[in-house]
Image (cartoon, rainbow, N blue to C red; front, side, top):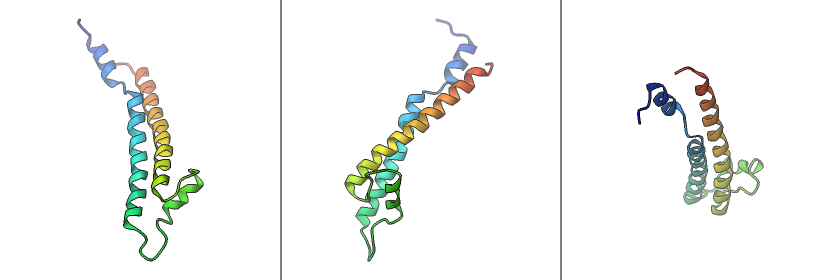
Length: 101
């Protein structure tokens, strides 16, 4: 099997859009999950726990600064990150396929 340099460049220049989606989803999901649980573990020092982070409940229905809320937030953020990562990979691949190698 002898591949030309052109075929090799085309194969290497393409991204795996699904992998980018999963990576983006994990980064966003684990980020919110971790931030929420760190706030819970630190506890309220004389005030409410995570008043700024709790504002996400307006954009992510069901989310709250609690362990169950962090799981719900993980799911929401994973889906959002997956869509963004998949879109980045797809757009990149379409742009790369138009360039001569």
